[in-house]
Image (cartoon, rainbow, N blue to C red; front, side):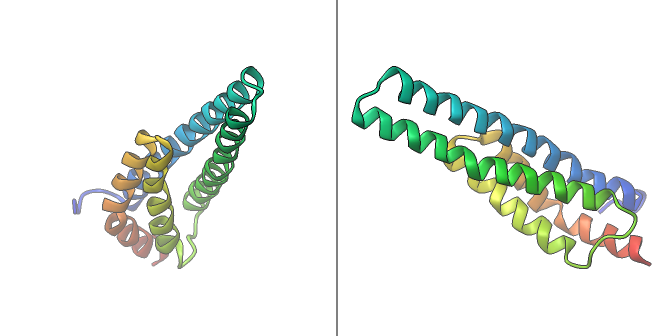
Length: 130
């Protein structure tokens, strides 16, 4: 850990990839919805219709994760962080890594980066609360 970095910069090391991941989650949700609409409207037979609905349903967790990520970043930007912020960061980073299952590689990479920077975040939050 770089002792010259301020707590604000260490928090930014985590909040920046979370915002990037949230944006990629919204893009992936949009592409899932577009794929679902394509399969549902262009191929109105039963099997592609079910595939279209499945693609559309995949967008719901991605949008929910993006909303949670934006809420998390807004809480990090506040003057006083909640004591469980490190736990929330860990859970979000794991959820971001699971987005690779729907083909969202950039979000998974950001989740891995956040997971590796958790120690920096926790030390920054400790020094900020003093």
